[in-house]
Image (tube, rainbow, N blue to C red; front, side, top):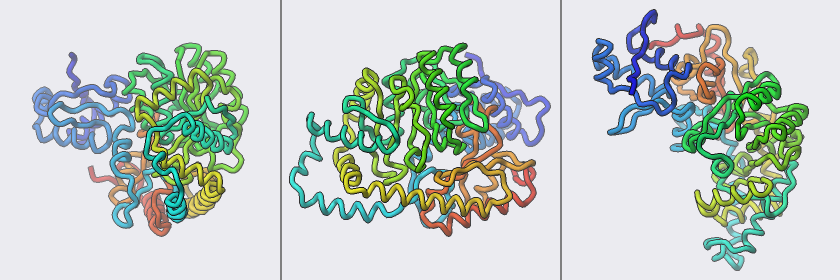
Length: 464
């Protein structure tokens, strides 16, 4: 096995920083694939004629930047893009009232869902048949769950029959179940060149090859997608066409029609993640409505009713729906019936509609706040979105900005966390506006970021 050695020729700065820069360049160029094991610290120090302290500092800095991960007793490995961010999100999604101001996690506002939950739980306590909500589900229960899914999907413009819907543990589980069901190890998965970071980790764990499909100012480029399909023969395409993660763009109807036609022409399975779709009062028709036989459509209540309410829905034509249902059974057997019952009640009594409207109002207010505070910056955003895309001004790199923001106790996510290859990552960061419950803290965080951008820019502002 070839041992990786960084090429430090012509590099400037401290030696540990040169090693990190060489590592980042080799990852971006594809020299180092995700999962590659790096040489032990002392071996690398010996081969480079450096001290072990220098290589140790280099590895520590690379881990801090999300380039590497360490496994106790096993070694140091190249991260899947976005892996560090995904693990942080998975470990702690709480909303502290103090400490760092977190604009890195894309959650909705807490809203008033807890008040409605208290009422619903009281009502449930007075009904018969509670035992069924704590037991395995029979055919009648599954039909009731299908009815809940059909009612929710109707809000997004997707019609479905009972045998075409699958209930999941949220949208992320729905995407993973669709990938499990519809691909095989070695298949090629296309994603937008900037995309939902956990999908990279999902694809890697399933043994899928990945290629990034280019974006432009309008989102995914149909012409480039068509060319990739003709040249590479992918099995599936994953995309978020509405309020795209992370760029906020929404594909216009013409592009959606073109993508549907491309999917038919190239026998391509489309996994359409529309978790943000219900936030827009007037979304374009989903791709699933244009090519229902080619599309696994994923939705969820987590971005509107409450992130802890882990209920998602996948709509796919047979036999894809049956395969996805099998994947859900394999991965969790069944979503908790109690959570699905809560969604059913909130859908029936229009609580869901009120909570969705509340999220839209809060999102619009926070987007207005962000545009006001960052008025002189290059921003892409949607009034109904939970996040915005901040392009760096001249002199700033996204990494330098993220680190500088961290020094001022504000957490943001740079574009590299969403990119398949770091060379594809623009100098931009995503700012999530819903995670902070207190809008005064959100404003303070945005003001600190604005203050950073008004100061001296670029790497010179960092003490490395």
